[in-house]
Image (tube, rainbow, N blue to C red; front, side, top):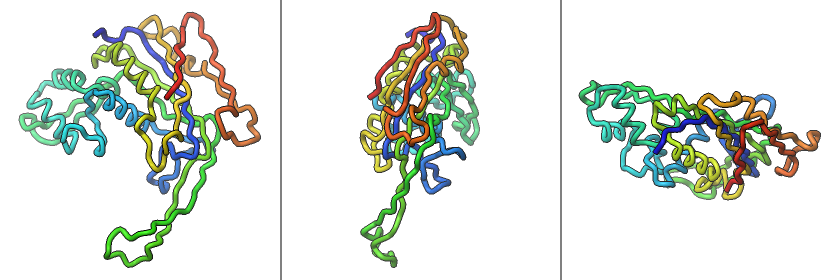
Length: 282
């Protein structure tokens, strides 16, 4: 497998319909938004979904969610110690971590575990080549809240009424833009390959497969398009910002709330000498 030699930029358009793309635990799990009403999905949330898709594809993942743990380890420390043993040299440690786990050589990882070195204690930082921006909606989103009830008590000791009130929050409709890049210099350090880039592309295209929940029912979150630019050199023919801006999305009737992707005009400007692979999502 050959290490990535050419810079890559990508843009992903994602729609949310009657769904909570990324709840804010400090705001009652309401969908995240800024002070101007534009919806947000954190880069951490996006990376979690990418890791899940990598795991679904059979790749070893270091940062696993508790409900998807496939190796029996209860913590990151236990997982690292089982694989790394008593490796002391930082470069050797980082190299083996990147070789073992796809998400480490993709996003990087900080290994900082307590204890003496000969007992598994370690402090190693790995910078990954893939950077992902926080996704922002392309127009303000309308957040709706509905009241729900719980019809049974959780335990026999509960004194309150069985009809307990609660709230559910969701975005009526939102079109979000995910932007990212792959750095060749850091790819060389982690061993991120051309094949790994193809895996990432497929993960982005299928981002919401096996991601359904009460907050995001099947079909409520959709990857509409993946735009993928592979430059002809390590540093890139154009700055990432200019490549990302080449996908222009405007609301057709800004005086009315958008209710579907049909309310937007999506135009991609051609960049001289830089081809774009345009993929439909699943």
